[in-house]
Image 1 (cartoon, rainbow, N blue to C red):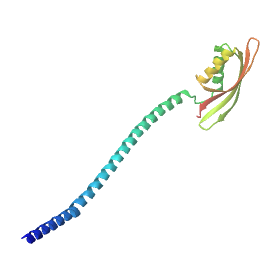
Image 2: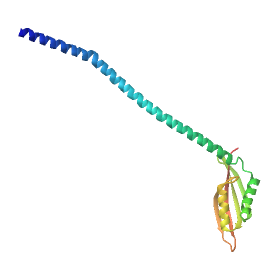
Image 3: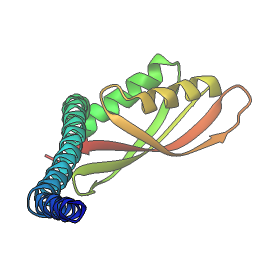
Image 4: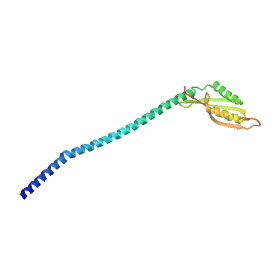
Length: 176
C-alpha cells in the first residue's frame, strides 16, 4: 500500500507539475507578454500625449507672440512714414530748431538711397545756439515725431556766447 500510495503521490505530483507547466507555458506567459506590451504601449501613448500637450502650449504661446508682433508691426507701420518729402522734412527740422531757440543756418539733402525694404536720406544740418538746446534737439530727433531720424555725426564749434553745431542726420521711410 505504501508503494501504491507513493506511486499515486508521484503520479499526482507529476500531473500537478504538468498542469502547472501547461498553465504557465500556454496561459500565463502569453498573457504576461501581452500585459507587458500593453503597458509599454500605454507608457508610449502617455509620453506622446505629454509631448503633444507641450507642443500645444508652445503653439499657443507662439500664436500669442505672433499676434503681439502683428500688433507691434501695425503700430510701427502707422508710425514710420511711407515717403521722404524734402519740403516737409525741412519744415519739420526748422520748426524743431526754432522751437528750441536755435538759429538754423543750412540744411542740405543727399540723394535718397534704396536699402531694400526701406529708404534712407542723409542730411547735413547746421545751426547756432546753446549746447543744451542742441542736446534737446538731438533728443527730439531720436524720439521721432513725424519722421524717424538717426543722428549719424555731430560736431560742436564753441563760440563766445553760442556754439555752432554741424550734424549729419539720416531720415528713414518705408519703401512705397
